[in-house]
Length: 82
Image (cartoon, rainbow, N blue to C red; front, side, top):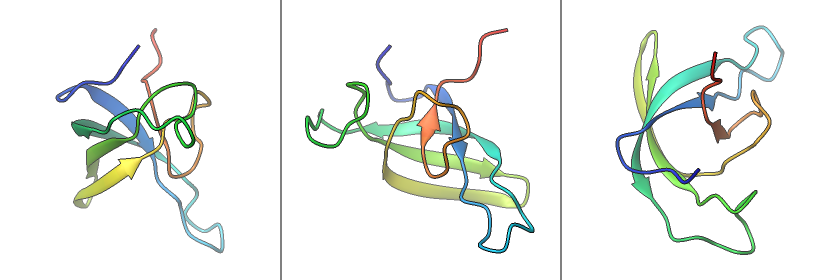
């Protein structure tokens, strides 16, 4: 599946260095899709720009890489199907 603008995905934040706040999945909306980069894209999925929603506010990130593995810090992935 390829990302498109407006899709809802999960972004795993980095947490903090001392482990007091572990990484958590955050809801995010894809706001941009970059051309496929053969050297850097994982699993053939391009980097995306995200608008990430935290409990305390929101944040924008550019060129976020994809991970097939859920909860990989600093990556986005598709929400699980239930």
